[in-house]
Amino acid sequence: MSVTAYVMVKANTGEADRLKADLAALEGVETVSIVAGDVDFIVTVSVETPADVKDVAATAIQELDGVESTRTYVAME
Image 1: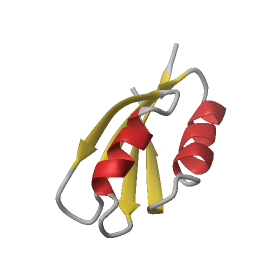
Image 2: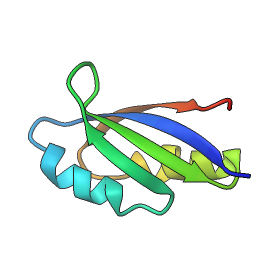
Image 3: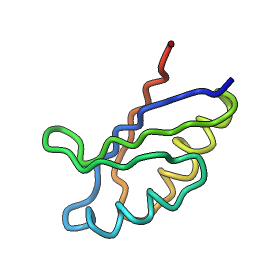
C-alpha cells in the first residue's frame, strides 16, 4: 500500500521554470503542476510510508534552492 500526499509549494519570484524540473526529478514525486493562486506548484507524491512523505516534503523539497515554503496534505483514501 502506498501513501499519496499533495505538497503545495511557494517559490521565490522567477524560479518556477527551473524548480519544476528540480521537483519532478525527486524520488517519490509523481506529478508537478504549476498553478495560479497562493502557491506556485502542487506536487503529487506517492511513497511507501508516512515517514517517506516527510523525507520528500520536509527534506528534499524544502532544501531545493528557490523554495520559499511548503504545505503538505496526506490523502486519507
